[in-house]
Figure: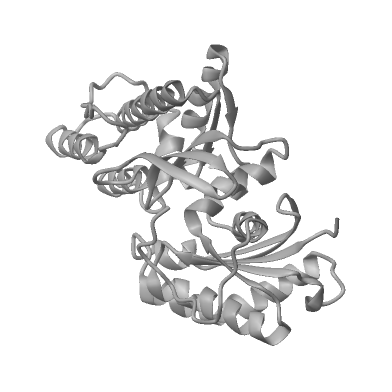
Length: 329
């Protein structure tokens, strides 16, 4: 069987990324141009600035990915996968427009790729032996989803957040207690210096949905009402409580579906405390998977992988493809 080279393009938020992946699992190149320093001064991503920066660098990033993959010519690429949602509409349009133009120019199939499917597929790159079915907990700045991956093209959402995403809660807490942006890694770092000695509320929902606005508000109120509160203890307690909720829902889902493979995905899955707590589930007979840190954040390798499996399932797109900022799983 002929090897298939996929060019992945990712511009859903504030990373401009291009990658060449062979057969959905072997990364030949993965170039990421991040805008963190640009948006840091604003305390979060400014959509218009993100879009403008994507336009400025996307051609350079794609060319660099092709050179680093050590392929002879751009015509060696077999398919082009691009993120078309969910994400910031202006940012998405840059990647979609570039991918459509390139697909037309070199006459290669265009694969519209769901950003969340990409995060899930990052596990296929880090764990070449991983195959469906399995449960994946997708935790990022914009999403908290518990998903059943029945096969490479069938996904069922088991539960999702009713308010804040996990990463959003981390960022808001970090901003209020003065840690700055991006909040997740800074909360994780400070939490290592503290103890889980502060009681925080958990919202119990009968189904597998999540709610994190209550715990976020509790942390913010404690910080405002207790000027001398130990920030490290607060971060540690916040992280511990969040993780307990994530694990509880994930185990419930695994038991209901009788699945013993659990994967993590998304930017928050790089959190060291969350990773370590999930690894403890191995003692209960579960197999735990998560991508290496560089594949947890937004990147094009995961989009190339997801795009490859979508293509193998018979999906292609035409040049009428448009960005869908609120795309569902």
